[in-house]
Image (cartoon, rainbow, N blue to C red; front, side, top):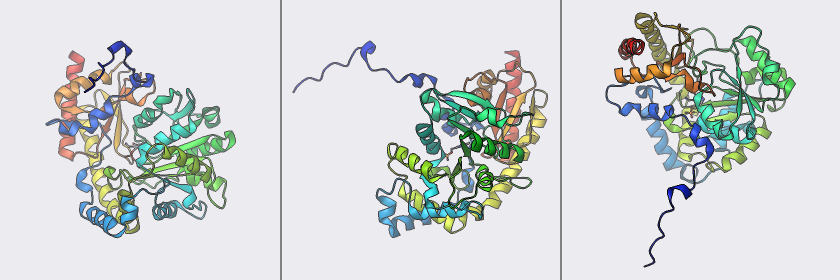
Length: 408
Ligand code: PMP
């Protein structure tokens, strides 16, 4: 037998790519935090598993395999199964926004959509005009291209949308209940962003996982709807790239999302997806199709909204009881998060997190939603995963962590 060659010395071993040194370590921690005994996890954007419609989904999966074995278990079209693309097109179509299958790409959930957008739109070192603070998963997806970020302060008085978008390879916003702040972008700013996208010829990415988790008041029109009113046509060909997912409405384990955009953009994204995963799982595409076609998605929404509204109120009440001396926050009208900002501008929530973990509570610090990692004043608190009494206990523990931070 030929002896295998000795492994190369450490110095000559191939190194990891440069961007690996800039990855965020927080997401991985929070996705596995459930395994830490006793920890109250407010760090992720996680739905409550008790709402997953398990019986119906199991039946949809059984039927997918038994009745559509070719589609469910074989390779499928990169763009996604035609009936699912049609169902998504129907779901978002309106007289002002006529959509066809050519406007829809099925993705392996929202995260893949963000990754594909980086591949299609972003050159090395390119400029992204992104709502600030920014979803950390988007920063993760685009970091390998070492982009520069222009932070868009959408709620600032006198926000100049055209100047904000000029020169960017694309703009990015979560207009409905932003991750991390939970804020809603107002109608005037939506219109200004869309008008600026048309005028400057900039792609405008609308990431909308939370749009249907609306607790008070009426929903606002999506950017893609605003954009269609500005330029009606046979099939949508405007500058907005709309991203949706079933993760928050049904279950993230399905890993099903979609992009709705101009056919030319769908074509480009399809080529990028080819080099990513060839196609999204046929089993979960068929399950998603059944969930949409049978009305399951719409049926479970009222219960979901009622449950999460109660938890939002419980978290805000608990913040008031335990942390009002140190933090300010707004009550969000939808989504999954409360964004709390320290009254003291010198506060460091990265440092607080160490004390919080020791006290059995975790949150996402503001530094991870900032491309430069320098914003240390805020924290994102999730209210959907835990029942009211755990949220109250979590804020009590966080109060103890603040005391330890201040004295340590
Ligand atoms: N965009 C935003 C703003 C999100 O908050 C999330 C999930 N936290 C995603 C995209 C991706 O979700 P998924 O991949 O589960 O669809």
